[in-house]
Length: 390
Image (tube, rainbow, N blue to C red; front, top):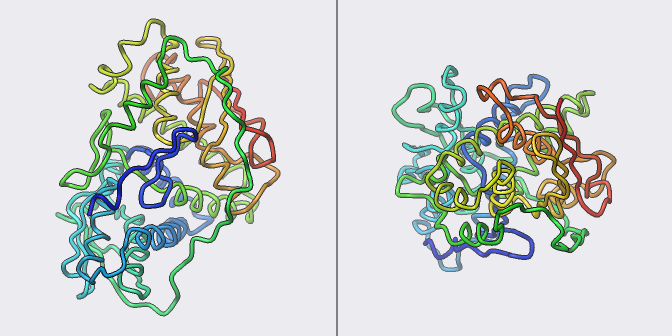
């Protein structure tokens, strides 16, 4: 089954394709933080946004990896195998026909217990949506899936009820991108970091779920998530918030989630054995750590980033030639008036805070500010970020 999920890496775009889907590497800190952000705004139904986005994307993704002639058992096996391969955990589907699916390993539970250990609540909204889409693709009819037991709420396993429904399966409707990325001209700053060597090493690393369906690497739990899921979810969140006059609030929340991603994800990465083996030997000056993080970001499929100007501990200017947020917005909604790269904007500030900040992690938040002053979404040739002290 794993051969159906073989990685295809588009080196010229820094894109990671699995089963016909562009996938982005993020960790349990970011994924849980993003879920927490969207679900805890009372003005919108965040759980529905997450569930609907996962359903639409994974109905398509699972359909991509099914083959003509697969029997029902093989189709159900593909549902569980893709979920595990991408790092989301382990699903037990033997009782799916009875309306029950269970899980004893969960990427999202790991994220909630790392970031929100004081909150004992059901945490698997993403899995509800995944199962709705994946089972529809595998069995040819729509389902409603809800979690009624969760390890994050103190249960010994996560358990989901699967019921038939009348509403059709949601579609992942988007248009082909009409944007042609600006060619990289090699002018980015890299310090003493060999970016291509880092990216080549990342492409060779076997990022796929273990027997438990998790990807422990770089001191965190990684997941290979379709860019479509992030884009569709965040676009709907922003649109619904904008309709209530809360666009700037949505912008701040998603940017803070990106800042948190940089601080927690990259802190784990910089303390990991993989960092010590791959990147630490290249570091001669403090700013080299920042260049190393930029190289990792490109290898993780976030896009083609480059530093165009940097004064250590003071300012940072970054260009993104094809960030997945901007490209995704054009695919789903076309061009717009406001920049849309909230994750990358937050990450830009978070990297400066992590590399140059002093004291506890929580004391560094907000010490740098990032602004996206041009965006591919607004028909600019690339996205442009400026970071400076708050």
